[in-house]
Image 1 (cartoon, rainbow, N blue to C red):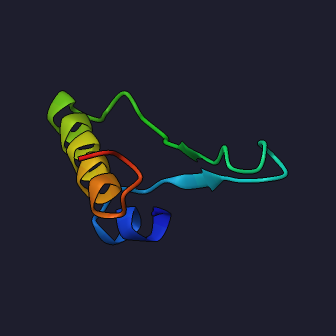
Image 2 (cartoon, rainbow, N blue to C red; image 1 turned 135 degrees about the vertical axis):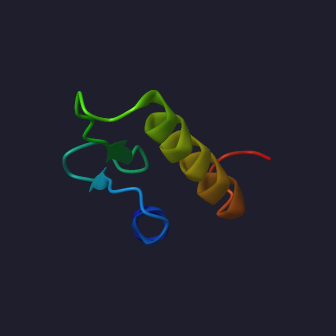
Length: 59
């Protein structure tokens, strides 16, 4: 999932076991005050698209 997001231009860091419970992996995003609202919405749209393609987010 993280690799696909990076390939789509959205930089994320995975948080996986043992930092979180097994099966409860997270994505860590870094936002800055210079990110525009449009950039944030675009990143969210890409995350949803990739998540649905991979079956992580229900269609």
